Image 1 (cartoon, rainbow, N blue to C red):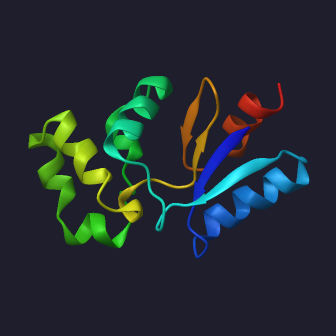
Image 2: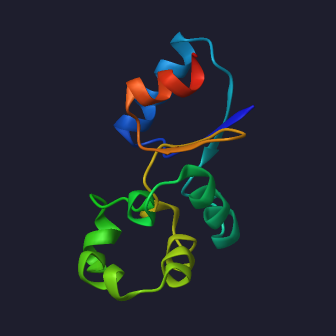
Length: 118
């Protein structure tokens, strides 16, 4: 079963969950604010995804801006970035879709359809 890390007040997350429901795709929904992934889990997700680590950051989020991460991240090691992401689910790009052999950040309908409907 797929897992979707979401935040209930996020309109993109609500749109993604509605899309899953319309396609009759069952998913385990995890509140990313209350049950965010730890650094080890994020590292595994990063490796599976093949994405750059920056794609895992919610760059439009309040915490990202308040912490000045656009300037700090380039000077941080991968492990430091993973450790930081693991401290607060609101730093993680959402929704985070996790399957057995893929991880997608954010909701792009065509990407989700390719992974879930083919």
